[in-house]
Image (cartoon, rainbow, N blue to C red):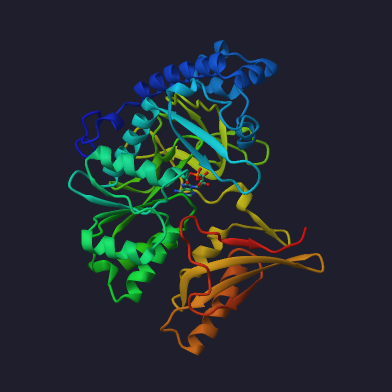
Length: 433
Ligand code: DLL
């Protein structure tokens, strides 16, 4: 690929050649391994026990000799045990709540914050935003990385940032309309909530100044993307990240090469492994995404098992690889009477049916040792009784024929399905195990 491509030349760092990228990754990986071994006793012990040393690394493939890191490793070292810098170098902490046990705590040096801001700025720029844009950030501010991560990146790009954070949806709508935001950064499920609030107030979302949405932090189906794009008249782009790596901005969808996400491979080295055996898989194969930080100072993470299901492949625009939109987290998989089901598969079917709103929740129950799945849905306000009964039949039929599982459909009153304030809770597991 030419290095002088005009199309993305406004963000020159992404125009690296494949050879340059590999050389850079190799150098950075070696440095990261050495720092982790020298400054994080946990890595030293784990690698010594495993019989592997940073000297065993020469080529990128050698990373496969090193053991994985998991959330459990971070928990065992709660709160700061895996930091490679003294606390006096740490300028920021974030944490992810986790459903059980202690949160995982992540730390950043000044340089880490700069790199993170640069990568979010890059994601925004390649998503079509720039200086002069007003960026409304509805990701939560606080220990969650979404709000501050988006904020620093948009500011670095020279945008005007509105730090709205999550919640107070009526106020969000007022700010978006009054300040004429051009770009919104929010979870897709909370965007639905904002759209609904606009509609309730008689505001056509298409009439706002919004041009681009940068959505992430949770799996969302292509049908959800289409729903948002159609209702708001914007480009709905996908941004991926996780606190253990940094936060938002590990990978992002690019406006000039829509569909799936480019991974910022100069800062994160991706691998795909089999989701059950964890053996490495070649590109074009689906499995669990494993990431290694290449430039993080405070918290170098080697071969982190993200539990996110994706596939790596070469894109057309850049020499960095693309990852398919996250299908699901491995631990979100429901097994209903022997059939594997992901929430996004149900979402894909449901959102194609006009008589339902995009608000839904999946309920798992158990009776007589058998698991049952039901879908709580709300009919759209314009749907007639016969539209609704037809829609129920269609949903049951399409889920059975497409996914192979029998579901019940519960019709809820308008507003009864809980609305997302950030990351949506799609599955309610009522089984007593
Ligand atoms: O959710 C960071 C983030 C904030 C990303 C804002 C994008 C936008 P955590 O709270 O640590 O960090 O959760 C990370 O969220 O492992 C995925 O399972 C999921 N996730 C994040 N982005 C996407 C996405 C932030 N675009 C976990 N598509 C990850 C699907 C996503 N899932």
